[in-house]
Length: 237
Image 1 (spheres, rainbow, N blue to C red):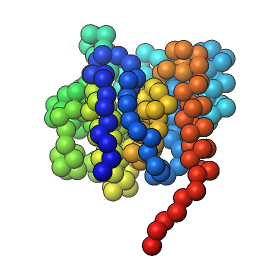
Image 2: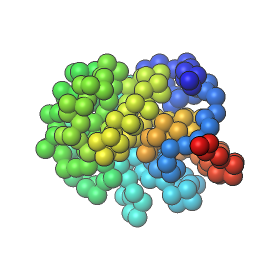
Image 3: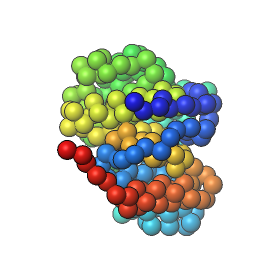
């Protein structure tokens, strides 16, 4: 039995998974993560994106012409919640219209909102062109989400940091069972990337490299995967 994940960050406390203490996993469950980076204008950050084949994460308050770079669209609810401001639907719908070739968009949600968040997200099914991901939040369970998952194109693991890291494997398994992808939001450290990788998550987003002008966390993650691929692996009969 695996040791439980131990975390020390709570919903709204800031950060993107710093403080995670977890033993190194033994083997992975698929290819490398697709990492989407918070938009930044510096040439250094743009070089990170091209070198590591990253994507852009764009929000109603932080977007740019992606040109040839893949991108996804976040609804901006977390930033507004963190800043104590009211979420603006008009700005999000405007973002959808300006950048229609997204890999996926996150349906409007309520941070740590459980069933209320699910009901809000369902209101936008059919209003926003796909691919549309459902943000799963603290207070949601797999049985309830299963009832509605086929109305969406994938799952976005949001919520508090402890909840996100402790439930990521369950949401990834549920998404894949229904032939959908799973994305985890706000993952900022190489340990977090490794954790989500071995949970089977398909993609993550982070603002850490853009804020600090430093891609070392991404490099450590990729180096870890390279090291794992060199280890001998035997399957006993």
